[in-house]
Image 1 (spheres, rainbow, N blue to C red):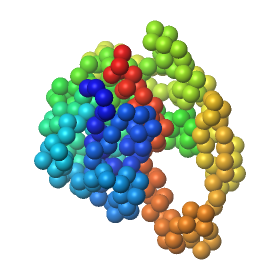
Image 2 (image 1 turned 90 degrees about the vertical axis):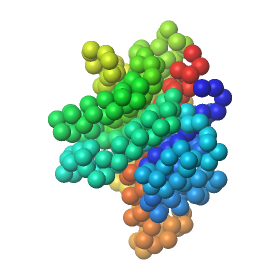
Image 3 (image 1 turned 45 degrees about the vertical axis):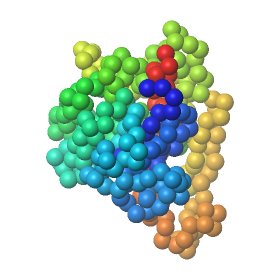
Image 4 (image 1 turned 180 degrees about the horizontal axis):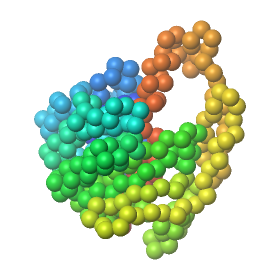
Length: 297
């Protein structure tokens, strides 16, 4: 893989994977797959010219214009059947069972990389058997699997949002290096280059592993961001030169609209639902940088 990295985004939502990879640089999203009508409108507005192929069941080689080679597939596949707040039907459930279309497309399109995100409940669903099934399915496609739980609050978001991140590549060492690159706790490890201060403040303590390795990998990480400031309405947070900046978010208008955002009455529910289903963009960007690093070393 060289030059621009072609990206196919499944279960696209409002485009968090596409935006994060875009910020990492060098990635080009060639197609989305999304059916929610509100999310589709956001994708059309924010990513004009990128086709939305609709339901994942209908996505195949023929549906991707120009017979483009896909270098990376991303998928935040539905979590409703995996969440501890749900009925825990697991991968046999109607929604989370759509994961098998991810496997189908990985097998058909043979991307170099696969990046997935889901709730931590995936690790315990059906006594851990569902996570084993995920790993086994990607291994059957010839890929090694690395996984790690990351919390978005350590990446500059004022929200506790733990998610399982899964990176797949044919080389186990390269897949693992994307998620476990910060062995020294401050950006790139000493053997690979100078520590990155922006990453040093972002990583939070977590556990994970790499398929084919006997022992679970753990990581000691750098100091984390304290997002406890702000007012009762919550806050938005980002990182600038390694320091957190807190800006209060305005409450919804009494009539159901925000004048500043020019949202019509009744749109807040759809907006909150879309954001709740979205992947945290800074985490995607960090992973995107890791993949690029592994491609150039």
